[in-house]
Length: 435
Image 1 (cartoon, rainbow, N blue to C red):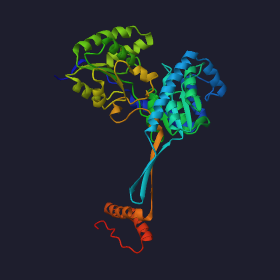
Image 2: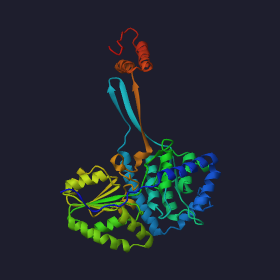
Image 3: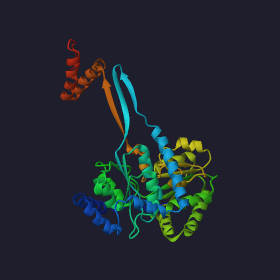
């Protein structure tokens, strides 16, 4: 049996990259040349906001006071889970050393970057969880300065819950500025901020393009496209749960793909029947996004067996991958390409998006083929060092000189020669390329 598409996507997520690139590049150039004043000019134009750019302690305290106590408790719960998981991740990276040969020692150190810039979306949805995910991991990694940047609303400012989340998670500065101008301010060190060494966090296509352009000058977590999700389901899956989970992810945006991969036709047909009804039950803004995503980008794929299902999933390399099937350990061992994996009906992508502890800043657009999501490791530089005794350097110097000469790099060879001549003046070495 070959794969059968019971529903095939009419579109694939894309944007006018050339037009977006030009717009973003022009803004970045303007702000780099014009500094604070030009950034404020763009903030007035795009954010329609003229309040404080860097929130004062009093403004932060006032915003936090507006957040209901129950929501504060939920944010603290999420922060605690993300922090604990990030601490576990950090514990997997150690400073190590080894005597690679007698008298010659090599090692590695994990050093956090100094300054992190965390972008927190605040447009269609106020992404409280993004503040938790980005700021917490930077704090656990050990960054010396963390800026949280989020778009303000005209006459209101940044959503109080975002301010509260960024504050309790450890942001040193909270900036009320969105879009390219916010990214630029963190990168160029405007408004008295330290220049960011790394930019993290999701955003629209303009934010993503700004990060793409600036990559190399600064580090980035990844270049994120529209969020995507795939569900692997067999005959034991509950169609109601599967359909609900697909709709929950489709509401992210009109071009957010959701995919169902199954080996059971009855399940697939039940889910396809249920999804439109569940979309119609959503509030209007969510309904419009989910309806467009399901209509234009969703796919339902019927496979021969679970091996083919797993292979199909790895080809799609989804950002979010859910398994609602028997033998979860088999799937955990088999699957290799995903941003984050959700095993069993008892968990869901929504948990990971908001409060479970694993990070929700994840690779999209099949980037899970080569990278994972945001973690403490993204903020850390794994650097190496070496040290040697004179006797320990001897065989390394000999090998270096001969390899370098074979490559035609005489300067490298002489750097080894001079050490051998100094440390072992009475010895004769054959350091020619054909020795």
